[in-house]
Length: 422
Image: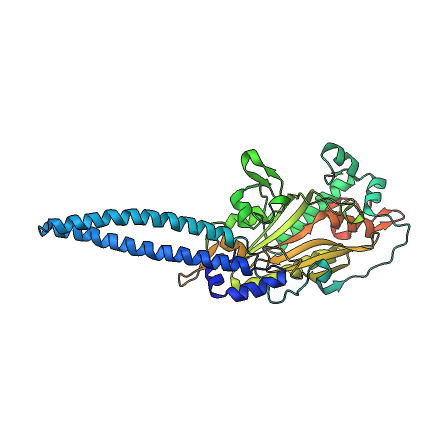
């Protein structure tokens, strides 16, 4: 959530920068400024009445002690009037504050200056590519056929038990999943991240704090009777650890890693781009989250970007990095890098990670601050990234490593799988 003071002092900047996200903020900003002015006027008037009431309260006793009974009673009458007026003003102030909040939360985060303009993923800027892309023959199988051939992932059984997008992993397929989770967690710990195992359900305050509400409410599975939401990523519970927390400067850097199931009610469609593991409603992911001081957050983002790249190198997967354009960057993010691996059997790039800096957007929602040595309270910056999301990693590993003798397991995973081939 943007800070109202920043909007007030930089309204034209807010409007122009949000155009990069293809968001026309002019009318909304005008309503925010109008409501804010009403709120401030009500607050000023209320403060004046309260000051007068305090002054009167002190005067009444003095007047009575001086025998000025008539003057004291006039003061009492005025005090009663002020109580009626302050009650009405307090009601107005609450109304304007609530309306202002409802308006401000509709504004997306401002994009970083480096975010390129564009409308969709077609306009994202490829900034890096690494690894050899082999031209596989027509006999190579996509992962959904490989999974069926080797009996390691059962999509039909998942459809029977739950529905589309909820596959069963079995045998070496299940062990490969577990191996990847353990590998990603161990790598995170080596890189200085503290491991957490978070809950898979969060309350409304948590979903609001990281920006899933109200922007992505339709994408989340809900438990209405309990007012809870299934998490779309471990980012939500891990970042909310610090909701309503005041940190100290020596608490930084905060680096956490967590594995979780993830649940997303994404709209379904037909075609190979959503077939098999390409798009699921439930999937496994290891997430990294950092809380940093503002002046350090973009250096941290670059460190996280290089860390995710190191994981893909160790898995031997060709990958590229895209800087998301304004039309593709999320509501909450200031700058996002997407990682894509090349699927040789499908002959296309698959997104496997997003690494984002939210600056103080989430922190303002969560009231996440830190105190400087001088005692000044400052909003922290939050960052997160997939390190990594499993489904498309598994898809690429199966497709890119298929041989006549089976599917070769990357050397770094063998200590975790206990086998070299499927």
